[in-house]
Image (cartoon, rainbow, N blue to C red; front, side, top):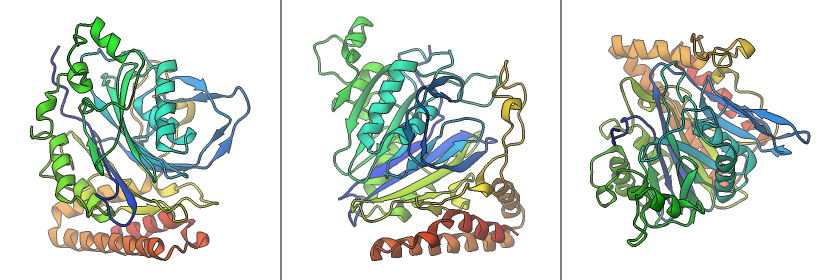
Length: 420
């Protein structure tokens, strides 16, 4: 087996004080997926469910819980879960594809993206979300095709989970896992295992399983990434891969990482963080989580590919939010090729309204340079204006819920006007 994973994945970042100023936690993620895959931004309100209810995830049904929290998600529009998102309690999660010594399960189970959404719907802190994910992993396992295609694309998952107070990295290999509480103010994950010897929580049989496979002798200090994958952990932050590049970008801005800096990192093409090609950055997210509980958490989403020519639009949880129609893909119910057996025999048009207009604008930017430059300037101006408005809310601690109930949707309308 080739020990090197395909160079396809995502990058997720977190900065906590003092790496982020102003008593705020800043979270960011680029979702790197097949270039023709549509990513939608959707909101689901908190809900109560009857005892014994079943929940249909992407491939399997599991037991539903009594109460689920409100969530906002950025997700590939063909599946149930999410690449990244946040809940009403200020918990944010992003996941990554990782590979290692353990074979990836071909059978259908929970996708890593399902686990992202389940963690957000069921937990009100980062560590509780971690517990939700590992409990579900133990009960149902992870597996199934992660791409809308009859070509199989499967992987294990790692997760970066943050809230107003702390952040955790959770990395998995089949049903086995290790978790690290983030210390030192900042952390990033990419498409490789990165937890080494600082393990704060672990699967009870993690070390025994490694010993039984001959991956660890039980004598030397246990290093999760070195044991469960082929990573040279001594060179992780100097090897030149995307994990290393992300680490360098965070370090460069240590002490001054704001939402704008995080957006700048996600837009960086030279490092490969903003990915181009057959796999590209199809959606991006940045969240600001103030440590003061009376201040709102603010979540910015693009809902469109390539953050360098997309607008990060703000979302705040308040009562009465309606569905985000212009960034919501069409649905096909039981006729969806994902739901039929055999799966993925055809691919419907899943483009939402913002995606379509953004796609046309990208063509204009490529072909009519002057017009493209003007449009990009207007997009940047709109984003700057929204960041400034959000900063004002955080500085003044004053939130008019009526004004922000349609905050994201109104910003989408303003972006659509630019596209004409």
